[in-house]
Length: 523
Ligand code: SF4
Ligand code: FE
Image 1 (cartoon, rainbow, N blue to C red):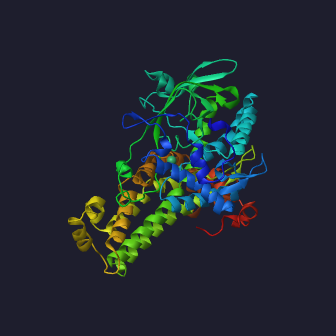
Image 2: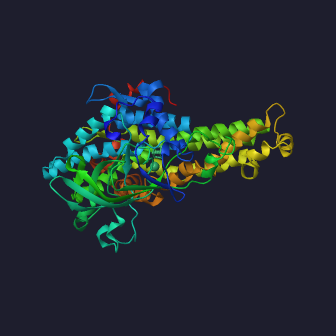
C-alpha cells in the first residue's frame, strides 16, 4: 500500500510507486485497470514526476532539509518558516510551469499543510485539542517517504443559497456520518480534485465558513488515496483522446497534462491520528482564508506556463517569417508585460510574508488575491495574442494522419510551409503546442483553472474589498484636500493596521530576503 513504501527520490521511482494500488477509477464509463499505463492519464503523472526530477537537478530550489528526518525532502512537503521559504515556493512553481507547460498538481497539498500548521495550532490554543501534534506526526510520516499529498477542498455544494446542513441531500458537502473512540467515517464528494489519483495521500478540508449547525461538515482529515470506499471519476479535458492516438504532433504537448477528478467518499474511515479538525466550526472559515492566501499566490505557476506560450508565439512568428514586424514584437512585449504582472504580485505577496503564532509564515492576503485575480484574466489575453501570432492554422490544421498519408501528405508538407529553411512539421508542431495550451488539453490548466481554481473571480473581489481600508485612504485624501487638520496627520501612523501595516512594516525584510539566492536566477 502507498503508505509503507520506501523514500521516493526520482520521477521514475515516483511513477513506480503508483502502480498496483487498486484504485477505483472511472473514465469513459469504464473502470481503469492501471492508471499509470492509461494513455490519457499518464501525461498528468509525468507532470508530477517532473517535480521529483527537478528536486534531483535543482535541490536548492525544489527540496528543503526536513526538520523531522534531517534529510532533504520535497519543498512541496515543507512548512514555510521565513519569507524566503515562501518566495522559493513561487520560484519553484514558475520553473515547473516552464518545464511542463501545465499544472503539476502538488501545490494544493503544500498550501494545505502550511495553512493547517497555523490553524491546528490556534484550534489547540482555543480548545485544548491535540490536532497540531497529530499534523506534525503526519508531516513526519510524509517526509519519511517523500510522498505526494493532495488537498481535497471543493465540495459539490448543491443549492448554493443553502448552508451544508440545510441541503435536501445531506451528502452534498463532505461530512462525518458517524464517530467511534477510534475515529470517524466520512461520506460526500469533492469536485475538481487536482492530481488526486497521482497523490499518495489526500487531506480532506471544508470548503467555506460554517455555523454551529454545520458541525459535522467542519472536518479535516488525511486519507490514503486507496482507502476503501473512495471512487474517482476522471474529468474530461478538451481534445483528451488525442493522447490515445498514434503520433505526437496533434496532441501538442505529448508528455504533460494536468488532472482533475470527482472524488466520491462512501463511508470512508479516518483514524483519530489523521483527524486534524472535527466540529470546530469557528475555524473552518479561518482555514479556508489561510489556505486561499497561500494558494492564490501559488498561481504564479501560470507565469511559468506563460513563459512557454510566449516562447511558442515568438517561435511561430520566426517560422512564419513575421518576427521582424514591429507589431509582432509589440505583441510579444505585451505578453511579457502581462505575464510579469502576475509574477510581480505573487512574488510580492511572498516577500511580504509574516510569521503566525505557530511559527509558520504566511504570505500577504491582499497581494495573493490580486495575483489570483490577474490570473483570472491575463492568461486569456496571452492566449489570444498567441493565437493571433500563430495564424489561422491553430484552428484548421489537418491531422497528423493526413500529414503522414502517402498521397495527400507531401502536398500538405508543400503547401503548409512557412519559411523555406524551416521544415513544415517543425512549424506545425509549434502551432499544435499553442492549440494545446489555448484550446486543447492544457487550456484546462492555463485558462479554465486560472478562472476557477483557488476560488472563482468574485471570491477574490470579496477578499480585496475586505482589505481595502477605505477609512484610512479617505483620511489621506481629506488631509491633502485641507478638510482634516494637517496637525492630526501624525495620528495616521496609529491607523496603520491590516494591509497597510504590512506595506509599511520595515523589520525583517532584509534579514529574510537578502539570503534568498538559493533559488538561483529569477527564472
Ligand atoms: Fe499548482 Fe498551479 Fe496546479 Fe494549482 S494550478 S496545483 S498552483 S500548478
Ligand atoms: Fe488549482
